[in-house]
Amino acid sequence: MRRLSGDRRSSVRINPLAGRPVEEIRRDIEALTDLEPIGWCPDAFHIVGDKRAITASAPHAAGEVYVMNASSLVPALALDPQPDQDILDVCSAPGGKAAHIGALTVNQARLWVNDGIKSRLRKLQEVIELLNVNVTAVTEHPGQYLDKFVEETFDRILLDAQCSGEGMADLSRSDALRFWTPERVEQMSRLQQRMLVASFKRLRPGGILVYSTCTVSPEENEAPVDHLVRHNPSAVIEPIDLAIPEAVPGLTRWEKRDYDPSLANALRVVAGPFMEAFFVCRIRKVEQETAA
Image 1 (cartoon, rainbow, N blue to C red):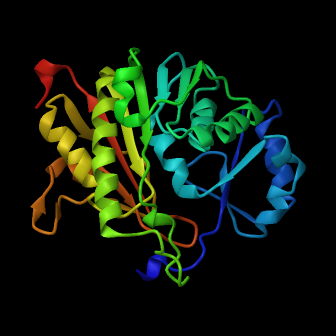
Image 2: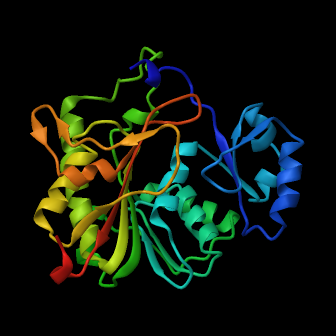
């Protein structure tokens, strides 16, 4: 619990879609405040100095950089999106991960962004416009019914699911858990399970789905994935090839419940000075006849 106490520092990612050379942008922001390169994510830095020096800067206003918690960089990297792929971001708002996907594919993928919460769509549209991200569609379908509204299939799907947000909690604050209850965790777990099943139905054979949350409860992390894997022989959990010092393997057992052993391939990001607690799991849909 001590790791969930205290503010987490922000990080900043340079946006290669902004139209100015990345090295120029880097020199400009390095002159503003102290930055520390993030070894596992190109063109991203921990903000060691004053965050306001970045957020009040011209590069930030121009969409040349995007400020976020470093843990939120992991899902898009785990997804490994490629140019000319069809990609769906199921719970896309506020847009930071979609923008990262756009950057990784140099705007050469067909990126569909969706969010089931209508009030969040305006912020999503503002972010993708500011950061010059090309998208093929912006929709507001509820994730748990995605397969009912979306007929298309995709090479890559990111499901950064709604969750109880335990990973963002600062337990040094007296009101940190004012919205948290065991019942809410169970409610989220059921919703996430439905969202994951619906999203997997829209994944093409050979495609990759990344499931992520900013929470720590196994009920919201390993449990929904375990349900998917046990009921879908074509769902295979793959290792995530990222050398993140704060990451540990996913759980394979919790409170006398055994999870699929392959959940050890998932990553749990442990909360620290620059990292919020996070869960990331990479799932491939294999051909039915080759599934384990």
